[in-house]
Image (cartoon, rainbow, N blue to C red; front, side):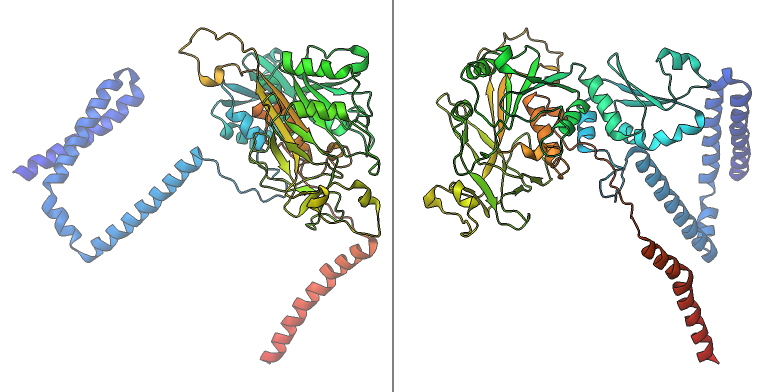
Length: 532
């Protein structure tokens, strides 16, 4: 009797479940009642199932039933693993980029910039529908890099209103919108996209002035050996503007100067220039970068007392030396290299590339009378030293060697020093605002000075060395107090093309058409002959 009642209830439960499905599709306004009916039907079906427990146990005691249960459980476990993998892959982006320059991975600078976003950044791609897919792989990496990034794809032929709204007149345009500011880029290159993102995140371009009038390097010069045009282009990509400054003529440093660069002066500063630079540093919390080469005349080095005195005031001691390196990393001992790990400093944090210097002097940190302490951020290896006897470098008969008794500085030798001093007159403290986040607070003004004992390492001829460009840009970014730009920048894909001579082309053709097929055919004939 009980089994009969349970059987009737089970059929009632099935009817309720199917009835709920029909109501949901035909009468959406009765959806609430359909839900109640489905729950009631499932409860009745489960009640019937529990009432048949004896028959269920007896069924699973059979051998075939046990094997079938194991097979079903295995299928469920495999499906569960596949679902879990799909769930994790949907929320976690993991790639293995085996290309030499990591051209399919976002650079450290891009990831750092994405991590600094404090508001939604919208990327809109405008192109024909058939061409939109070429942007997806690159922009998906940006989307995975930050939850603040949103990517939209717009078919310009189907949505001319939005195309006109964002003033797009070229196929393949990416519009980046951030906090009401927009930038456009017409390529899918990471370097171009990140540069556009930098401009919308930091809308005010910083101004870098290169001092002139003392034989310094010129950012407008494209000469291979002494030109700085390539590093000037790198500055523009990071949203820095640049100009030359003849301080002897102007008598003042412009108010829009973010960083003043003295790149490889061949003569000393003028007497009237020193107080102008000092006033810029002390009264305006200025930023100064000095690239100070060894003297051209090693036997009779010209005096540079004003420039060395200026550096000494900011905790940087200049030496009349040339650093020699006998580690074998370079063929020329007078062209030392610096290798990771670098001394701990914000400029070289996580910096993992070699930098090379054609001819470099030692710069040592010290504490100035004003308690301004320098800190080394670049140094050469332990088997290098700074040679004090410059005249001996031109003597081909007697090879030089480290001699501390003659004033030589044993390695590792400091060649890059930086100093940061808080503003002498801090700005008044604003009223407390509990809703403000720490990252929203304005940066405290500082005077920052950095010096490197060589200016040629970022000339057009040597900028291609693995880490030279990034080190210079990190120094400028640190001086400008734009720490979010201190990172390894996007790199161009390595050129892997081979240039073959006519003989090599013929050899490859014969090898692929005759030699390799002939070897395979010969092996087959030999195997057939052995079997016969």
